[in-house]
Amino acid sequence: MPHSSEDKKRAITRLRRIKGQADALERAIEAGADCAPLLQQIVAMRGATNGLMAEVMESHLRETFGSGADPALKSEGGDHDDGVEGVMKILRTYLK
Image 1 (cartoon, rainbow, N blue to C red):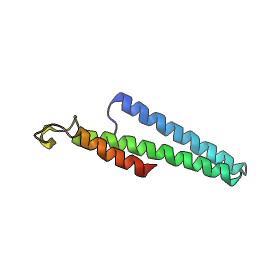
Image 2 (image 1 turned 90 degrees about the vertical axis):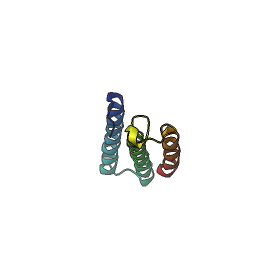
Image 3 (image 1 turned 120 degrees about the vertical axis):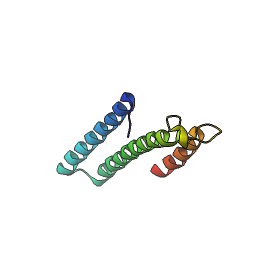
Image 4 (image 1 turned 45 degrees about the vertical axis):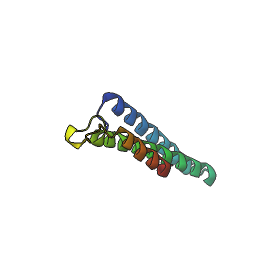
């Protein structure tokens, strides 16, 4: 869960964008829009949702294993920021 005020603001902005996309999709369906624009809007919503999921997941991983983690969870050589970056890079490829 995003904890800083900036992270919360970013997450809420993403959520509002997704809500706007859902409202636009609903209006398009009610208006009888063609399938191609509907599918394009659905893909855009999926991308926005995946972006939000990646952001929250990265926040969670950094909180758990990164620089803000409990010192008892850190390795003797330092923090796990590089490992978090690697995991997020892999996850983002699957969330596209």
